[in-house]
Every structure is written in structure tokens, then in C-alpha cells.
Image 1 (cartoon, rainbow, N blue to C red):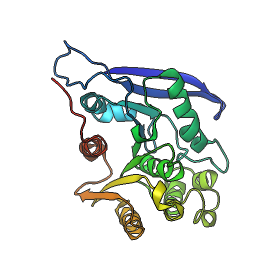
Image 2 (cartoon, rainbow, N blue to C red):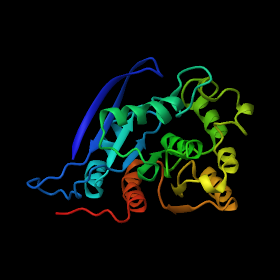
Image 3 (cartoon, one colour):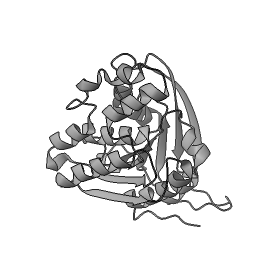
Image 4 (cartoon, rainbow, N blue to C red):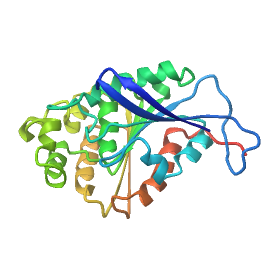
Length: 264
């Protein structure tokens, strides 16, 4: 695999931004790595980080490069700071950035990444789990499947927690007043309910039973089941930490790419 660090100017954010991109490379002499077959175009996973993290965190806390090599997929890891993958009420347009500009940039810079919907996936942990579900439910024309690990799926509840854990107006800066979230484009429950069945993405959710976000994940799980989504839901012992996400991202890749196996 090749790892590419991309510094580029974002017209949407109006500032320099960063991407880390893992690209398939068929190797013969690399020891200890399985690699998939060379292809004209590669499926792509947009892999989103959580709060306090950036585009490098998945690489530093998991073996995502090795896992991607075995599947022969590209992985795009963008930086979205504390923006909750949202066009902020008072701030930057992170949803426009991640849903439009980043895929367009990747299409230009990396032409072997497939632009087809059926080859385009998104996943994330915590804030990134919210972002992954939001992207797939808002842009089902672009993303065929989404996976959330310990996702902050209830935006209103998470906004209140942000105000207590970070600075007092962070939640309102991102989403606006708490009472404006239900039914808005930032409300995953409303997005799921308003999407017609023929456009719905496949969804995978995992949350640890000791996680502080466990109850809201159960609530969203039940909501998707009531709407008859194609949902794969899993839970197991675990809290909000990387030792569990490193394990679970492997299951997600097997769910997304069940027929892609590496060669030694």
C-alpha cells in the first residue's frame, strides 16, 4: 500500500486542509503483508475521525493500512476538526466540504479511485460515526453503505455534552439552538425517516455496552428497524476506546467487502 499525505487549499473552508489517503499497491517482495489484485479502479472507504482527533488518528491507533491492503481498497481520511461534519450555524461548511469537495478532490488527484456509488463507502467512530450516517442518509446518490462505531447519533444530546466538555457555545455554534435540531438536516432520525426506501443505504452499527453513547445507539437502532432499513447491528462489551474500534473496523471491512481477499 501507498500512504499519501495531501495538503491542499479548500475553496469551501477557505483555508488549507489535509487528507491522508491509503492507495492499493500490488507488491511482490513486501514481507508480512497480503495485497489484493491490481484493478483499473478501486473501491473507496471514506474513514472519518472523532472529536479531539484528525486525519492521522485512524492510522496511529489501528492497523487500517494493513487491513485495507488485504481488501485492495483505497481509504480516504479527511480532517474535519470539531465541526461534526456539519455546515455550522456559526463557522465552517464542513458538510459541504466532506460531501462534495473532498470526493471531487480525490477524483481529480487519484483517478483510480472509483467514482461509482456502488464502490463508495463511509465509516467513522464517535463524531465520525455521526458523520458517516449523515453522509449516507443525506447523499445516498454518492454513498452505498455507511458504518458507525460508537456513533454520536443523537445530535441534540451530543450538543449539550459538547457544551459541558469543550467550550460553552460549541453545540450552538455547530447546530444552532438545541430546539432547532429535531427535524433538521442535522437530525439523523429525521433523515432516516424522510428517505424513500429505494434510496436507502445499507447501514452497520456497533456500540460497546459500557459506552456512554450506548443508549442513544439503541434508540437509533430501534428507529431504523421500525423503518425496515437494511441494518446490521452489533454490540459487545466495550467502552469508548480504540482497543475496541481496531477490532470492529475489521468486521466492518468484511461486511463492506466480503468477496475481496488478499494474496500472500
